[in-house]
Image (cartoon, rainbow, N blue to C red; front, side, top):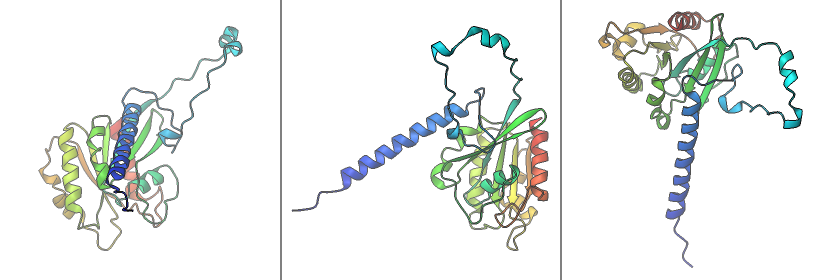
Length: 244
C-alpha cells in the first residue's frame, strides 16, 4: 500500500499556525493600544495577568462601597519599545533595568517581554519584541504606539550590522517624530566597533539633524553586568528625560 502524501497535512498545519499567530498578534495589538489600562506587575508578561472575579449578586452590598476609601490615583504611563536583531542584548537590558541578574548564554525571545518600572511621576512600560527574522515583520506595527524607541545593536557583530542598519532606517521612516535611542551594546568586547564606526556604519550621520536620535555605548551582556553598569545608567537617565 503506497504511503499517503503529507502535502495536505503540512498545508493544514501551516495554515492553522498562521491563523493562531494572527490571533495572538491581534490580541497583543489590542492590549498594547494607547489609552488602555495595563495591569502588569513588575516584570510580568501581559498574558500572566489574572482577570478579577466579579462578586456574585448575593455577595454585593451597596453599603460596603460607602465605607471603602477612595482609590489612589494611578500614575500616568509611558511606553518604550525595545527592538534590535536577535542576540543584541535586548532581554538582558530589560532584566538589568528591573534589577534581575542576567541569564547565562543566548536565549532568543520567541515573542514578547515586558517590564514595568515606577518613577515618582509616571510608570515606564518597556516592551521588547523578539529580533528573529520572522518577528521583524511586526515591528513597524508598534512604532506609532510608543513614546520612545530603543534600538539595541551588537557592536561586535560586524557581519549582520548592515541588516541592523536596514531595520533601523525602516523604523526611522515609519515615524519621523519618534525619539530614538540607539544602544551600541557589547562595547567591552575586543572585536567591538568604535562609536565613530557605529555612527558611520548605521548611517546616523545622514539622519535629519532636527530629529531626536541618540547613540549611546553600553556593555550589557550576560557575562556579569549590573544595573550600575555606566551605559545602563546613562540610557535610563536619557529615557526619563525624553519621557518627561
